Amino acid sequence: MADERLIVALDFHTFDDVKKLVNELGDTVNFYKVGMELFYSVGAGVVEWLKAQDKKIFLDLKLHDIPNTVAGGLCSLMNLGANILNVHAAGGFTMMKTAADALRNEANLRGVERPKLIAITVLTSINQAEWCGALKISDQVVDFAKQAQAAGLDGVVASPQEAKLIREACGENFLIVTPGIRPAGADINDQQRISTPSAALQNGATHLVIGRPIRAASNPREAAEKILAEINGV
Ligand code: C5P
Image (cartoon, rainbow, N blue to C red; front, side, top):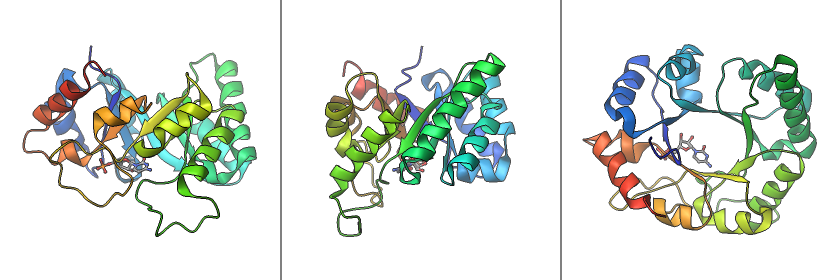
């Protein structure tokens, strides 16, 4: 059974690229992230295809709108059967709570398993110099995480550098999904608040979202196996 703490980001715009990578990774990877690039170009069929391959899916569409619209959008997305959906915490407590309540009610009504709902805190691409919020980034992240938890969400997306603070503030049983993961040797410098796979997990992350370090490797399966070996036992 593959280690489901690793979620590989399928940031492609063709179905062929998805099939090639997923087939190449085979049993090594069980969890995939479908984001806006792929979803907007290929559509819902890619989620159905991944499910048919027995893969789990984090559908990362980062909803951000008024509460009623986000709740309705999530209930529509629930039809696809993804395991994790998400919203922006910046949409506010009421939006998050309305969304979480709507998903719970709808899943009960339909008798289907409710997807986990998590909130984006502050993107890992933003650093303190660019940030214009009133709070320090790390304080804002923790505040968003507490709001998400109080609103009934299952967890957050956050930088690995803030995972420890979130774990301390929100306790166990709270998902902390961390992008911005750079294994040793990865030469990708466009994200700011980054860390290695094992450090992210040691700091309390439950899942690592990794894209280019695997996709851009000359041998993606080997790259994934190396990451899994690094986190084995952590
Ligand atoms: O290629 P890379 O490993 O940087 O990909 C990271 C993935 O994580 C991207 O698909 C990006 O959308 C996602 N991400 C996120 N939240 C952040 C930062 C990146 O979901 N705060």
